[in-house]
Image 1: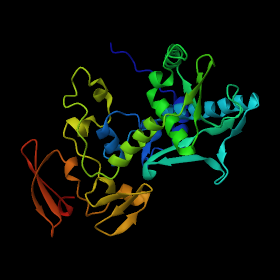
Image 2: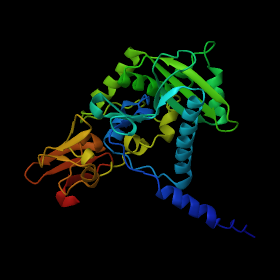
Image 3: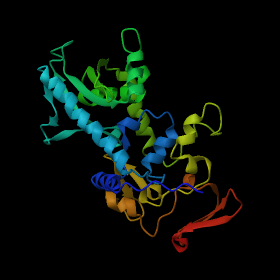
Length: 322
């Protein structure tokens, strides 16, 4: 006899729905600083172009995001409790510090600026707060200075965030403050600004953002021994399996990426709002590098482009086929 399915927990499901409803699952206008450490240029380019199907953020995942913000507030409160001067909002806007680099295409939000840090009371620090699982927190401790290489080794993506915030605010130090969510243990590390490293990361995004050419794959064979990250990459379908990209203005060959994370339509000769970019228009044509095939014909008057796909099938991209 087959086992009966477990009963649905309606209360928990209702809570998850409510949590999901208060979140935001839209596309980033640029590259999030938390994602800029991705070593794959192609993955970053796909993210800029909104090429991959949007990842669903369910209630449980949104709750984890909320927990991170909860701990951010508590950790900044810890600094205030030891009499640090903590500046949580930008006085120019009255909101959290928005950070933009690479002509606006590299984006993030700074947790705070602080002085009075015990190791260097007079130095202005940018502050980055993170909450960690038990396993992740142990990795921090494993590489803790002075015996280890610190955050650069244990969490290179977090290290890059610290460097970019220092670059934007002209700070020489970042205070990385973390908590173990299992037992409330705290971790603090002062990060020295590395201008060469930060400027190279910014220059990389400046190079990728305006390009209408897809960068080379990091791995041609996603099953190669070193290509384990390809296995869970959300871009795997487009990158390796011939899937089509999403239809939006950023995947269109008429889109031009301008400074300030703005998109200009060269067909209609105007700038596009965020919502307009999401919708696209009937004249959408894919950037050729987003089609898994060989271009064999084009008709500018009809605004169509013909491709021979990897399967051997002929496909016509254009308003008459949409």
